[in-house]
Amino acid sequence: LFGADFVQLNNNSLEIIKNEGVISSFALNECRKFISYEKTVFGGKLTIEIGDETHKVNFTKDLGANAFTNSLNKIIATSIANYIQEASKTFTKEVFVEYPRDSRVARLNELCRTLHDGISKQKEKWTTYLTSDELTKAEDIARFHPFNVISLQEHHEQLKLKERKPFFDEVESNPLTLEQRLGVLRSNDRNMVIAAAGTGKTSVIV
Image (cartoon, rainbow, N blue to C red; front, top):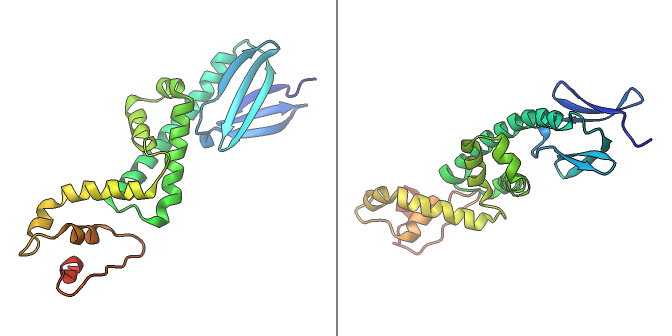
């Protein structure tokens, strides 16, 4: 009368069954948020979020529901942990090691938004199911949300100005000026350096 007959776990996929047929199936390795279970007047309610879509399964029996939800979330935790590890590698390489290029904005923005939304909306579950190291890595990326590529590029520049100061000070007979140093560091997809004669263009290129 009220929707599905039952919900089951099948090969890391959550299946909703009606009349012995699967009416919905969700791959848990695609979840970036944990499943929640809530007791209601007419039975429990499972809430599943994948991407920007939210799915609800109502009128569930309370018996064993918490244990079942916990089992699902342990599987999702493994998926989220793997996502965090890959996101951390990508973010480190494309923001801290290399210059944050314009062509990478969409990917970096998605990483920041996904992790920020997960932590801010489900902090208790993230703390419960993830290790402190995983949570720290996620927070290190999430803090850049809302994403602003200009501020991220400036953040990179400040890191590299400090890190490479000894080199910039000694690479030529005279230390490079701040403008020259930024000319070296700003390795965007397309670059143009404009300078008057005798101001050190060759040193920047070298």
